[in-house]
Amino acid sequence: MAGRRAAIAGSGALVPDLLAAARHRGFEIQLLTLGRRRDLEGCRAVPFSLSEPQQAIEAIRDFGATSFVMAGGVSISDLARERLRSFFSGKAATVGDTGLSRLTDDLARLTGARPLGVHEIAPELLAGEGLIAGPEPTAAQRDAAGYGLELARRAGALDLGQAVVVAGRRAIAAEDIGGTDALLARVRRLRRRGFTADGGSPLVLAKAAKPEQPLYVDLPAIGPVTIARARRAGVGAIVLQTGAALVIGRRELAEAAVRAGISVIGMVPADA
Image (tube, rainbow, N blue to C red; front, top):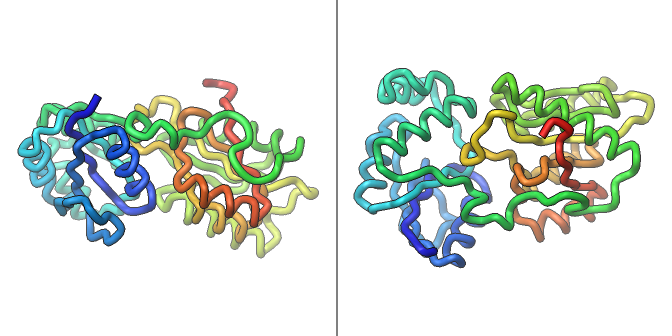
């Protein structure tokens, strides 16, 4: 059913995919952007700052949005973090997924609009089960993928990042506030120094939603850029949690995975 949606947009290629899906389904969209974007032609954007959250609240109210969605990456300064804490009376004490879910609940209360997940507007972006792109994974890669997904869920339970890299059944590195790009850059440096070798065990990147994470808050995602950076890090396979991770730019990602020889698969975590 068509309706009015507000989209709070950060950086990255997820935002254009979200807008295309919303238009296809007949939604009227108001875009609130954190910073300038030049890849969103044909859409009126309302810029706002995390340091002034009242701007977003008033824009959502004025538009008459019945729901809102958050999409894209966000880099938050210490000043903006403190102002968010002050504005929301200390409820958003962190800006991990736990803090974001509290902030999102407050936005819903102050605007009268309910939060939506990206997957509720663009379900086609969700990772399915089985092979998503690239060559069929080896048995060793599948085993490492299952182990990596389990570790990613454990890290998520601590409200850390949503991703880990493993070599077989040995943890190599976990995502932190720097995100997946920083994780892969770190793995690349470790690999150059010989710290990722484990008897020829495959390097696998695993991404999973945090166990208690509402699915309207920052689902893990990969895109074509992830494939390129995974290749440079020596990663041979990427595993995503089925139904709780996003695949952005699927056609371009599939082409990149074939060129890089990287298997992309969806799996259901053992504890899900």
